[in-house]
Amino acid sequence: MEVYAANDVIVLSDEIWSDIILNGNRYTPTQSVSEEARNRTIGIYAPSKTFNLAGLIGSYHIIYNRELKKAIDVEARSTHYNNMNVLSMHALVGAYKEEGMEWVDELCEVLSGNINYAYEFICNNFEGVSTAKPEGTYMMMLHCEEFCKSRGLTIEQLIHRGWDVGVAWQEGAPFHDPWGVRMNFALPYSRVVEAMDRLKKYVFI
Image (cartoon, rainbow, N blue to C red; front, top):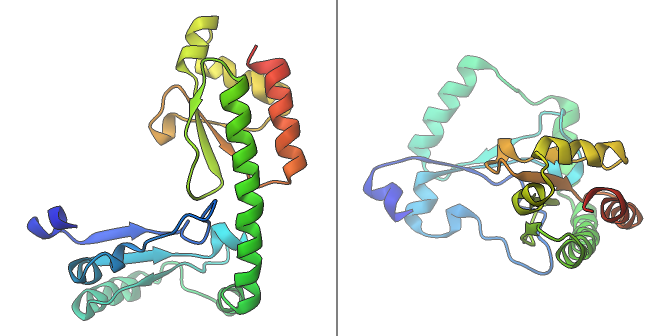
């Protein structure tokens, strides 16, 4: 934020994952870092990741700087892009009620268990594959360069191996890792166990 202030930069902070925090970690909103951050930042949020409400147009922003808010309002009115509707409004309000908070707490416990199991399994069983345990979200990136080169495989071939045995995963290149594979662990624990078992038996061999 000091760098942004020195260069008079307005910050757009995508905080869409802010509800999904794993293993007791704590989330710090960008706008809470300092008074400078509070007035220089547009915080962008949505219930879509947490509550599976993508498509209902429930995204929103938080802006404390009144002049910045006026400028954004002018832009929003001129385009009419992604205006909320009655259904999306009630879905957003419902998601952030007390019942939704309780559900999110339980969700984070489940996702923490999934991530912990997958991380330990990958570290102990997939030789030549490195990863990091995320503190939030339900995504994990596997870096597979060493494994692929030792087997004479391209990353595309490795990804096809997974799909061929029913493990749906995603290439990491769009996320800045040309040797990466991106995995989503927002699923039942039993499916995580099954996926890891299939990868061990048929893919990372």
